[in-house]
Length: 50
Image 1 (cartoon, one colour):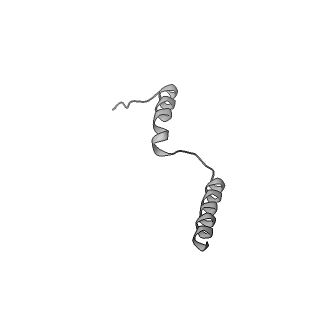
Image 2 (cartoon, one colour):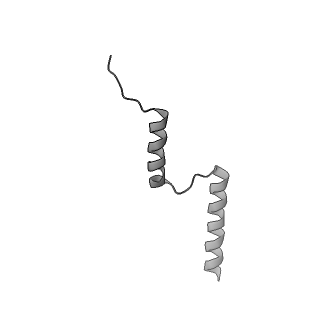
Image 3 (cartoon, one colour):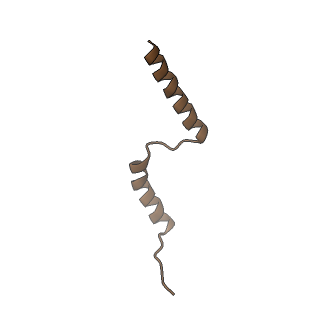
């Protein structure tokens, strides 16, 4: 039976602490994401109408 390597919980959290900022600057709920997108759309529409 082949063996596989596994990380401890501490090692996994350490890796995530280092790597997550490379992929995201924030973690949002779906509603927060839609609110941010809606705000951006309204902002760019009002700027283009000015």
